[in-house]
Image (cartoon, rainbow, N blue to C red; front, side):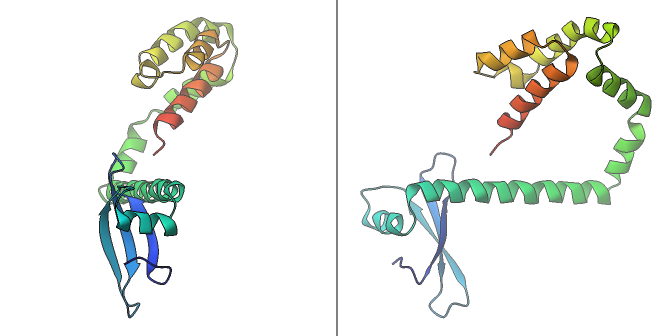
Length: 165
C-alpha cells in the first residue's frame, strides 16, 4: 500500500493523535490521494507507514502543518480586516498619547512608574495566561520584577508559550 515511490507525507489530523492522514501520489503521478489511517501500532498498515515515516517525524509533520494552517488563517483574517476597513478603524481609534504613555511606562524607571508597577503586576496576574501557568518560577519572576518592562517580558514569554501550536 505505502512505498517510497508513492508516499508523500503523513500527519495526525486530530488532537488526540489517533488518526493519520497519509498523502500518496497516484500511479500516474498526476494526483495526490489522501488516505486516513487509525494510529494503531498493532495494525500492519500502520506498521508499514511507520517504516516510511517514524512517529517523531509524524509529530514534526503535524506541528509544521498546524503552523502553516495557523499562518494561513491569520493571513486570511488580515485580508478580511483590510477589505472591511477594520484595520484603519482600529488604528484611528488608538490614541497616540496612550501609546506614548505606555511606552514611557514600560521603558523608564521613573519613580512614579515604579509606584505603578505593583498595580501592573496585579493586572498581569489577573490574566488567564498567568492564572493557568503551571510554572511557579515564572510567576515568581513576575512578582519579583523590579521594572515594568521586566514583568512584561516574562508575561510575553508566557503568552508566546501559550500560543504555540
